[in-house]
Length: 627
Image (cartoon, rainbow, N blue to C red; front, side, top):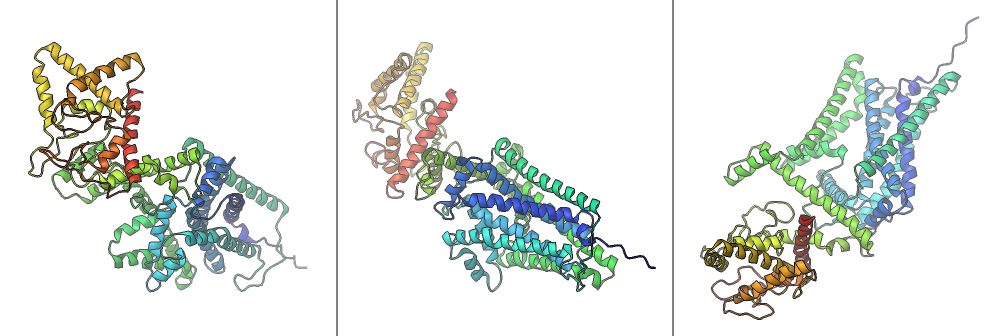
């Protein structure tokens, strides 16, 4: 009597570690769904409230940072695991018929995971999300024939706005999760043999030994536990060890200098597109070549059929591994290109720029990397500042940009770079950390009105950080009276005792004038400080008052700026708005004001923000130096 056939277990589902990959994918998807639903109870998909919602989750809600961290790292982990799953199917030859549909599902998992990450990124409605999405949408608009219509479809209009956020929210929380779930179900049905993936009738008699089922369940449980532990560890490490809130400043369409970079899994494409500089080349690099490569991955299962089985598999494996290696190389290169150059290399580049020598491609990359790092630090500062303002004042109904646009620490440097840096510098840069292309023609305003700044001015008024770069229309030095006055004071100090007394007087008057920026017209109550300021005031009234006025009073006949409240917010406001006013440099005489009026160029609110930033940053630098 023939021996009955032994039931065979489903080798497609249990081959090697295939089921471990799908278990990890399902576990990450479940974690994303749970944490996503938790955040949906707080999140508000509106351009006025989205950033505030994420801030509340991250900073105010109990364990909200943990929920958001789990969601973030589960999203990153899903992309990594889906990539590993695709690679595993190639290496184990599980992509060709009769497993073609499973190969397509594996590619679908990866595409859906990246799509969910990209749509979810915009929901922060911060600078990184806004400008990153802008770049991606611009790439999509390069599609021939339908590019413009595709861009409008994605954005819901001509620019990123409320409709864009609504569409991305719907895709992220409904459409993509549903598609991912259906893909998982299809993969499960194929693995369980409940459908006909290859035109064969399903074998419903297949069973599996009891000990094998226990072992598989144990492995799956271990994978699920590892996924959860890994995401918890990453979230806790990011929060406490790195201090990264993964939330940038609120989205601002006017901040054109934001250092936009794509997510880590798209860095390779960013680096790849650097090789295509013209419009036609961009279409080739961004649309045509990636489209061809995607099509080749789709039809890869037929490669072994068109050639011999061994040769076809070798070519398919080489193709996928080459793509992976190229992706890794481009990603690493993109990171390296953004790394800050050494001080020696940067100094060499600066020297060549000064000498008008053409830079090599490496030197140009060094310069761009240096500027990128400066912008990145500024972006990090604004992100921290936005969260600090939200903690201090809350987010107004008008949206978080109201906080940012009314903050001197944020707007002051931007206004300085836009309106002042063409002539002035702030600690050698434009206020935002960058070096303007044109040389400075006026004073450096870092620490303006502080004791050190005034003392350095009295020591050498014609230094490049003060009056040294200023010229009259005919090219001769401007504002030379201070130099003549200080030289005269030193000439009168003929003995060592006189010179020491002059230095002490300069120290005292510097302290006195610096105090005018804090408490105009009043002296400090502290006796030691009060004595120093009193001596400084006495020196000013007996010597400096010959040219400078104080509350409109003057001993001499020469004209120089009013010094009541010198360096205060009100004094700086007046200087910015009307530098040619009678109380400043006038618009007549031997050395009229060369600085233009800004009262007609920027608003009074912007003048106040700029003045407050110059004043407050000087005060902060003084307190830091004292500490």
